Each structure stands twice: as C-alpha cells, then as structure tokens.
Length: 304
Length: 192
Image 1 (cartoon, each protein chain N blue to C red):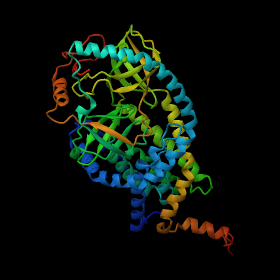
Image 2 (spheres, rainbow over the protein chains, first blue to last red):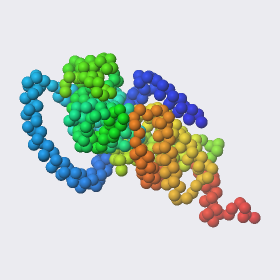
Image 3 (cartoon, helix red, strand yellow):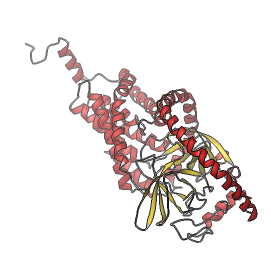
Image 4 (cartoon, chains in turn purple, cyan):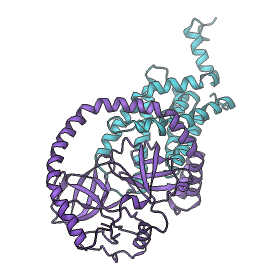
C-alpha cells in the first residue's frame, strides 16, 4: 500500500512539475550516471544484437529484394525526368540569387550510436552515446541516412534521449514534395509504421508514393527547427476530412533498426543557430513563412 | 517467504543484481529486436516471477524498484511503471501465498497475465494522463502481440529467475510438508 502511495505521489509530482523541475533533474542526473554503463553494456551485447538482427534481416531479405527491384525501376524513370528539371531549377536559382542555401553540413552534424531503446509501445525513444560534451542540446533534430529520425528530448554530458518521430510527444512541420502544401506530421499511437500529415488545405492533391519532407518552419516556440527538405516518409493513403485534409505517411527511416544517427547541433553563432533563435522568438502567426493555408508555417528559416 | 520471516540480505542482493541486468539487457538488446513490430518486454516477467517465488512483500518491492529503474533510465513519466509493477508484483506474490499453484504451466499463465496487466495498465494510465497524438486501432493489435510474445518467453524467463534466486530462497514449511507426503512420508492425519 505504501509503495502504491509513493508511486502515485511520484506520478503526481512529476506530471505537475516543469521540465526543469526537481524530479526531472533527478532523472537527468540518473541518466548521466547510467549513460557510460549503458554504453559499455551496449558494446558488450552488440554481438547478441547483431545475431538477432542477422536472423531478422535474413527472414526479410527476399521480400525486401523484390520491393527494391520494383523501386529501382520506378526511380530510374524518375531520374531521367528529374535530371532535366534539376538543370532548369539551378538556372532559376542562379537567376534569383537563391543558390547560397544551407546544407546539412552547416548544422554541425554529430554522429552518435544508439545504445538503448524503450520497449514501451507508448514511448518511442532511443538513447544515444553523445551528449552535451559533443555539442548536443535538447530539441536538436536527429537524422540518419534514410531521413528524419526525431529530436533530442533530454541531454546529459555523455548521452542523450531521442524522441522518435513516432513518439506521442512529437509533431513536425512538413510539406508535400510536389504541391508544397504544408501541415504537421504526428504519430498514430500504436502503429509505428504510420504517421499522419494533418492540417493540409482541403483542396490539396496528394498521391500515394509522394514524398513528405520537413518544411523548415516551426509551429510553436517549443517546436524544433528542422532543416528544410529532410525526408520524413512517403504518402500511403489520403483521408478525406471536412475542413482539412490528412494523409497517412510511412516513415522513411527504419526506426526499428537504428544503429548510427546524426544530431544536427547547429553550433552557437552559426547561421542555422541564429535562424533557430529568430524563429522561436517570433510570436505565433507572425513568421515570414506564414501562408495562411494551413495550421502552421509560422517562421521560415529562409533556407529552403 | 513465510509470515513473520523477512527476506534475507542475500536474496535481496540477488534480486537487485538480477533487476539491473534484466533492465539493461531489455533496453540494450531485447527492445532492439522487434518481432511482428513489437518489442518483447521482459521486465514485468521478472517482477511476477520474483513475486511468485518470494511472496507479495518482496514482489511489490521488486516491482516498485524495477519500475523506478525503468522510468529513470528511459526518461518516462516517473511513477507510472512503478505503480503498475508494484501491483503486479504484489498480485503474483499473493497468488503464491493464497493458492501456491504447482502446475507446470503456472509460470506460463502467470507470465501471460503479468504481461497483459502491464500492457493494459500502462495504456489505461496513459489515457488517464492524456494523450496528445491520435491513437490507432493498431494499438490493440500491438497489445495482443505483446501479450503473446511475453507468454512465449515466460518459461525461459522463469527458469532464469528461479535459477538465479533458488540458492537464497528460504525453505517454505508448506512445501516441505507437501514434499514429505508425496515422497512417502505420512500425513499427520494418517499417523497413529
């Protein structure tokens, strides 16, 4: 009975306090102590994990090969058409002096290894082995070679906790690849292979297979400023709703099997960091990118 | 644990070591190998089996400690896992104290019930605390698969927990009596 009461008190206190409160600080301190142990345990247990991973990969290899062969055919056709478009695009960029844009390298990416993962279906989080000592801060975007992974939720000196884009706390400002319609990508709890791009204008034309990328905008002061153009996923289906349209999106990054990720730290004094400060300091609805066509797009980085 | 006798220091140390190892193996390996899109959770199994072997007090204590460790390590809402694990640890301990089930399938059923209680309890708590994101019906499928996977690993987990603790478990007089009858000893009722 006493333990139940203590649990309830902890729960109430934790839920009611601010993110910089005492219990959150205890959690951060605990993670600081545990991070090196977790890192060591991860290295020691890596062969076991690899063995299970190898079995899983072998089971799915044939299906993946067939899917990839189809994709190669499709992409080859797309490449041919996009090459001519790319040439025109660069000509236009030069014409309007917009070719001095930010690249991922400008965001000072820090490479980190995933050392732990939550088993809980309500929390989609992973632990990484780089923290504040490497320049990682809370809200920094996290990517891998496939696309957007999530953002840093908590950082300690030698480790950090990353909320994946399928975590219930996440919301990412995004746009559809071809139409430029913007909305907010949210997870669908219970389905880690499905995201929901919501608040698209009602007349938006979205086709299955279309890419969804980060818009480079923030929707609230608490939001992370993700660099524009990072792949989030592909549209799988369209939902008809009354005022706004929403589409289902399959994440591009394989979030079940994360090993190495990059944290975009945007070091102090750099252009991305300055833009980030500027974006979050703007009052909601006053940003340069506000289009009025959706529920977000409030502050543009001007980089995409 | 019999009424009136507390857990030995050796038993508590063994449980503490086992809890730390299980939580780190869970986070570092088991969680990263999803089956049918769901990660197996072995921490509730540890709690119910400690309760089943050591009784309600030790079960509840283990549940609270393991839950707190999980919440701290995974930066989850502090107290949620502790609350659920305390209750399932206590429940499995009471099951032992009141019924003392001896069937071979007991660990399997208790493991399944413990996993189900943890998954459903956690979902209820999250709903009570408020969910910002849309919830998919797939959640039900995930819970069902989670219970099946928990049941699948219940027996190996039972063997690990029992072997880790068996040397430090005190002899239970009821079991000693029962063993005596079944191995040829006379029941007190049949003695002259």
